[in-house]
Image 1 (tube, rainbow, N blue to C red):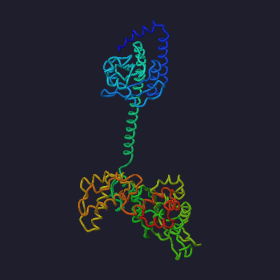
Image 2: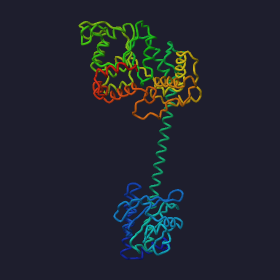
Image 3: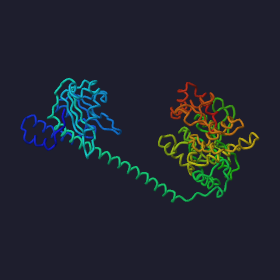
Image 4: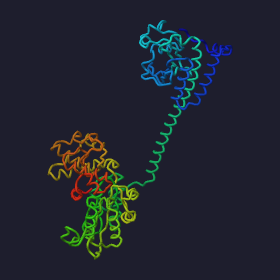
Length: 534
């Protein structure tokens, strides 16, 4: 075992030595340079370096080892003479040899590690190493890693003359490795700068929107009270001011928003704020089969179909002088949508089984939890009906976008519960208020109301503690949950979940949903009609 010669000595030997082996190694280094220049990426560079070293020096195996923080080592490339990866490479190298090269900062070789000073090393003995050749990879005064070659079955595979050549290999590899490291740093810096730039652009855009949008007037500027829609967040107030301006008009209104955001409450508020003296009539069109929904909306004569034992005027006539609320309008059959459009345009309706038409005078307020434009693109909603219904569109924001409205709604719900039970209202302490605000409330106001009712019952007259709330993480994605986001507590909850999943899988087709559930269509229609309105 010996220390390497200086680089200048090596260059002199190359110039003055005409032996064919020396020329072959010089050509190998030139070829290595070409290979490294053509390699794409760090992994390819290291693999080429190790494969060429194993081939040139006649090693059995080759390893590229990186120095990690804390003085440890990590094998990045481990290749056999057949250019195959080596399994469990971390266990195939001598930690004693690696540590010695790192401490001395220079390469070492051993003609027979079982008979020289390295034989005292436990790792050398365990690995039964014979020939070893190891050289540090230096760049910029820093050791980036180690190039390690060995042969377990042949002594004298390497000699002193191999050290300068391996140094040349290591130096070439270190330079390219260092360049790839700089490129990685540049890419990471560019990524961070791009991320910062995006964040800055978003901040500037948000500030621009805030400056461009006029301040939303408070509730005191409303002409109508809207008592059922609790809160003072800008998102809610923007919707309320639109509702306030159109309440006394005859314009059709389309309410959009997620389930549980209060679309029916908004529809009732529109009716109360209007000049109409007729009644408010609501129907969830998703809960009634197409053939029955036509009769429900337009009416029917006696004997028009099996079970029609008496004449019915239909909801469009029943809402005369008032408001008809069509909830989940995007779930209506397309054929029925065409009939509804005709009735609204002609302001007349022909009951099922009748040859007479009757005038109608109902203001239409529709609602959907779908994006109407997307529903049109998917073929769920007729575009002409959409334009007829959406003369004015009002979006009701989800609860997660309404800030402290959560606490205002909670206080209102608790006050109602206290009044119903004839007890004093329960105030929310700081911990409970924080827990309510931290919940995303995917079910919106309906979920919050139901959760508070559940917590009130569990508290049994005691304080409302945060631990009584249903943990959001307790719900497994895809598993049935009740309206408050909790695991199901009764058969009805499981049944409701199963029906909703079947309808979703069937794309809204109720006959197909009934088939998936293994029940008759009539049974499904009955169960849907018994559900509470959205």
